[in-house]
Length: 230
Image 1 (tube, rainbow, N blue to C red):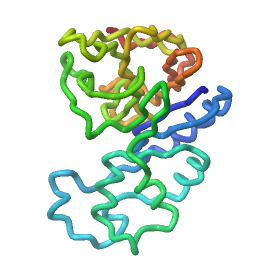
Image 2 (image 1 turned 90 degrees about the vertical axis):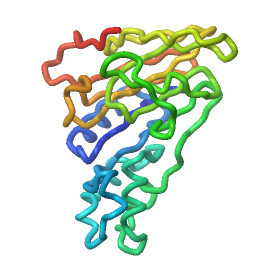
Image 3 (image 1 turned 45 degrees about the vertical axis):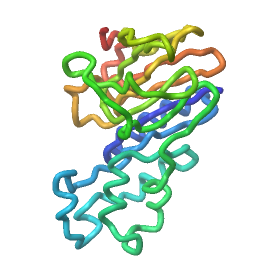
């Protein structure tokens, strides 16, 4: 089974359309979106005091979002949770509930797919945050939330406190996942608004049968030399 996985759109419809167009040419079995499709205009610190007036005060409800994501397996992120907590259900456009109330995760025998915001995060190195201490079933945890394409090999359960090891990410080159190891896959962001986090728009293809993960990048220059180094 081959999954194309994207996440952290944050309202960037143009980038979402470009990524999905490229995914359609990759002949995958399923497409998964890990959440943060929308960008909530009310910050986490202001959410408790926010007084709802209009949907537009909270987020841009662009119906093209649902059209683009038709047929995609949707999971929810923290942006969707915040929006759902701020806008009364009766005021939501009818096409938004499937996105705002999607499940938190999707599990297969090989991997757990999720946005990842409830996971235990730590800064594994300056500027790189990862849920490397998370307890998860299967061989791979595929997540978003921190907008950076990154790959960590993590200790097997019961092997003590061995350090997680960050592996290099080379776009368009499959990484073979060893059978005796577990991995944490940070997909990277579709949204292009935070270039300091790493190249974007990015997505991954997880081939569960071949046990590979391949990072991809919409690179305007056409170059494949971009790399997130370990």
